[in-house]
Image 1 (cartoon, rainbow, N blue to C red):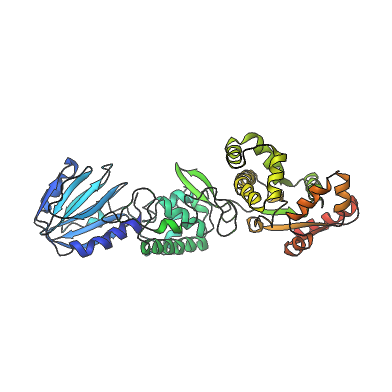
Image 2: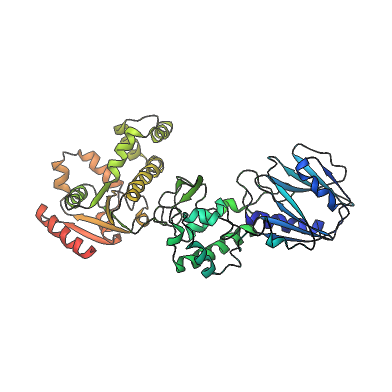
Amino acid sequence: MPELPEVETVKLKLEPFIIGKTIKSLDIFYDKYLELKVIQGETINKIDRLGKYLIFTLDNYKVVSHLRMEGKYRIKDLDYKKEKHDLVFFNFDSFRLVYNDTRKFGVFHVFGKDIDIYNIEPLVNVGKEPFYISPDEFFNSLHKSHEKIKTALLNQSIMSGLGNIYADEVLYLSHIHPLRIASSITKEESEILVKSSIDVLNKAINAGGTTIKSFESFNNESGHFQSSLLVHLREGERCKMCNNVIRKIKVNGRSSYFCPTCQKIRDYKTYAITGTYASGKSLALSMLKEKGYMTLSCDDIYNELFISNNKMKKEIMDEFNTLDKKELRDIVYSSEERNEKLKEITHKYILNKLFEEIESSNETKIFIEVPILFESHLEKAFDYSICVYSNREESNFIEKNVDSNIKEKVDKNQFSKEFKKTHSDYVLYNISDIENLKNNLSKLLEELN
């Protein structure tokens, strides 16, 4: 459905053609619009817009138009012949304005010029636009609502102009999860939402709107804002702020896109545990679990998905022609490009599953083992990073009976422990023995608390 930017674009495109022009006659091909007959001979003096409605002011009438899903206006020559889905011809001296609507959902309302159309249906319940609503007004309206904030943004009586596309973009820029209850939004967040709405709508208007499926502003012209979308329709792609994976959920039946890091649904902290191979990451994670903390492992999730997620396996099979883990390891170790491709496929599934589990818990601190945190540019996807720094890797390699060739390939495909140490928020030293690691972990937890 065309939203405020699309309808504003239609208004701006129509004005130069029809303002001051007289409708000589009408050809109406759909009985639902027969009431338009009375405007024959009228001159169009002005076009206004309220939310997603166009308002045409004529000599003796006002016509309110809503394009709904597929409505379109086109300027054609007078000899233009009717095509499929053309429903109304507004005939002027030298051209005709064609209203075309594939689904026939669009509506026209005709009112006398003296009627206050803003105090009757359908405009009486249309709320103020983001450009004109104050943050306090918006805040007060939200606090009367028990809806999810995504649903509240789509409620045109609270604030008009936002549809599904722009509500997703506004919530993303405001760092607000779409499932938050509207009444939980603070005054500060209300101000941010209004500002983000204005910014998004202005950018979309300047781009001529958004064309996802069939929107045409005028004479088959498409919008261009779709190339600037940050979250909407970007499921599985990387967030441009934190590099986490964009997720899609349903909110009141509408597809909603968000970033689980930038738009947290509740207050919790994530700690990514990283380090070089055999540095003691898994041991530290198990100690944290013993202490009662929620722990997750990206490797464990990957192994689980490798068994249960057919979609991920199909992508791997299509790209690498094998599902044998040893073969895949040899392939990615032999080529940096192939290694990146495997990460591109698997990480979106791993991160999606990881944050599903985080969001479904009630924990306030979650520790996650992320072996290649920095190599995958995922450090911003988590609140903090902890590097397990060890001088025992060699002995651990020997203990684990790891082939020296594998060790060499592993070292080649990961950053040095010095890099990980200096780029992490915290360092957990694993220098001598298990007791040393336990003591250092206790000290770290005191610091985190």
